Length: 208
Image (cartoon, rainbow, N blue to C red; front, side, top):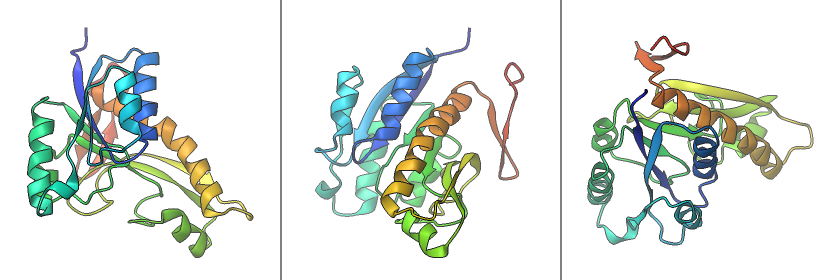
């Protein structure tokens, strides 16, 4: 029997990707424990959902610390208290220090609403519409110190329609995020992901 894995999820808002992961883990009966959902905002709606699912919730208010390093140190202590195998960023709206990222190297995932390396940073859907691209999407990747970079685990492509607005494009991309992020997390907990020369390799079931 595969060993139980532990995950900590970080959110800043409603955490829709967190919700998708929790639902999928339950529906598919993953060998996983969601050890905690942590937010830097006490008013994050996602905390309510997590608590309703019986997941412990923690608030580390970012405005309670004098600088980014102090906040990251407090956040790291809260995460490490659960000794997770994987840290999942699910709409966590903080730029993390290099030291924090390196501490979780190879065991922290993020999802970004674009086909990386295109359109890093914020307002990705606005960037895509302004650039006139025909294909947009989302990317799950391992987190590295360089913002919105790191070895790519999964991507999904979404067509950009002639009458798209930022809102309609964002909504369509988000639907697909809710599919590929749980899938990528499941690959990790199944031990199927390895990074070779900066490229993620996905083992077939039963190979890893």
